Length: 239
Image 1 (spheres, rainbow, N blue to C red):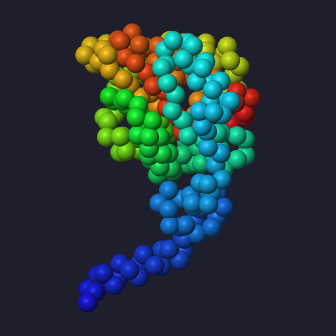
Image 2: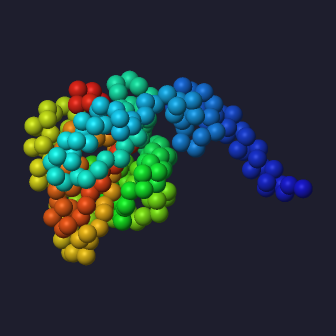
Image 3: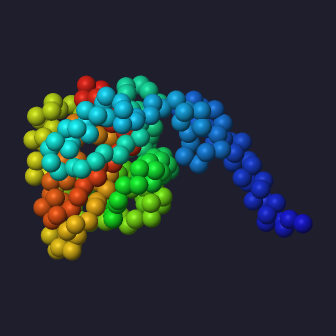
């Protein structure tokens, strides 16, 4: 027999669900998903495979720069498609559960690919921006990855030492200039990392300028970089 408190809890939770039902943030239908996105809407998000021309283009450019050895990514970011809404809800509306789910999906890709990873580094945001937003979305994604592949997150190995402007309205050369010198690795913490494999995590990769700027710093200490993101997008896509 249920106690009075258990009965009260059931009543309160049922009433809360009635007043604030768990609705999908994309299609507004009822969902049992904790990340507020129904299964049907997840299925509408365009998946990126290694055979996709955009994946090949971005991965090739990253590898050609000489700082990144591989790229793991899940989805195609396009204007006004469901994935754009998903990313915006993570970055600007504090839906951290979405970041965790995206991370878990990246983690399963890494497991399937049997890629060696020793530790995970989320691309840092400047302390001013993190204070304003309250969190770093790349770190939330990294937590989801860590839960699947069981590797530690090392978020203090590299810092963003310059508060750069948003990349979204910059051309390719401006993007590179914007992040040049923006990151600084912690030499003391990286002394014993030579020969290790790092998963460098961001939310969206467009030209790869940010990932490359971080990877370049970590490369100085003999670390192999595997880039990871929830999605990739064409340079001409507007956020």
